[in-house]
Length: 266
Image (cartoon, rainbow, N blue to C red):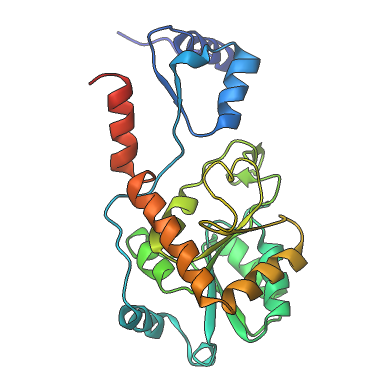
């Protein structure tokens, strides 16, 4: 039997009717998304769970020796002389805060900044614009290696702006509703995080407890946070360990799945 293809309007209506089923447990990744479903679509929040995204379970911290071994593979000769390495992992789309990273590299020229990710076109544009010796675009990295390389950084940056786009057309703004997997992978790396101070990210991240938070578009604020981390090893240890404990206890796929199974009484 040939299935009838539904137009977009009909598909959306069908999805909405499914979401309104009283016995169906719905899972959303943020409070902002729950508010959207409730206020704009009339979804009953009694059967809705807020469960942020997560990272694969079983990620373990590495020793200082392992960290240095990974760095040897990563680093070019010109980067070996930098004491600290700050990393960014992710797309180079609009709203990801690449301008903040460039501003930090200008202010902290004794620190190496490495950007992992982006497609060929974005990387080419970035390289043409970049005049800084301490800022390097590393390009695509295989998913199987991402967690290893994250662990080799001294600081991880998450400079999302207030408007965050996704996809090649960059038409969808997810800045108010997102729960980026990168955040949980960062937490699992046991490396201190500096993140944009956005309400949706503050549902998981707590300034001074498991990260430092900066005003999204204020490079001076980001610079101050970075200086704090690079000069205070006790703070580094506290933030990294608290974030990792949060990942282990709550923000991994196994723990997330167990909460869903419990909710539906499986």
